[in-house]
Image (tube, rainbow, N blue to C red; front, side, top):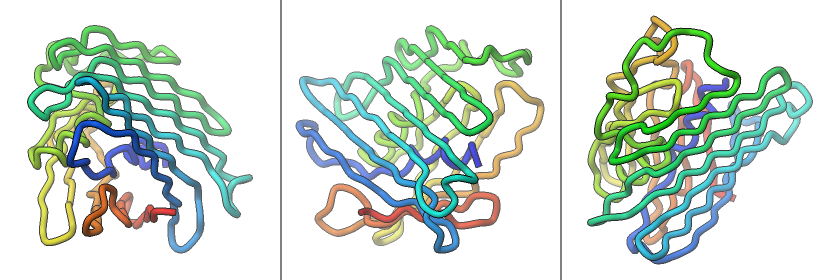
Length: 219
């Protein structure tokens, strides 16, 4: 469940001009049952960007599966490409609370802080990885430029690989590596984004996670 919500920030379509403020809300459903809502905001100004996501449970299952997530990325724009400077992630459930902070420099990790502190030894030398961005920045770059994007979120490193057919953009997760564990199991199979003509953001998003489809519909 946690990994599913940590991947929601992959689901937003590009904007044609780097000069606006946007905010859009989505309702999250699984098998027809409302699980929560998501609010996405993006500000682009003077060659810089700030984007954030806010997740919150609601609906019939709120008492059983409470959750809250906050994600924020800040960076620079050059030649229509976005470059990460800082990424912050906060995730809270009934039983746990996790925080991730990453500072980037020239698409490499300069500093990474996890709370609680990770007790495992890193399986990969993440500080030596090159040409990586945070998840929010990677996703926006994919939709701006229609090219794959290498991503690191503090716990995993992977390649976001987009393909487009008519009005649907499909994002596959490839070259997946778990930083703090030996296994490479990835429960997220793919994401489908349904593009609405003449609209900046998709009207519907399907997420195939552990064999079950989660849907985000614009409110």
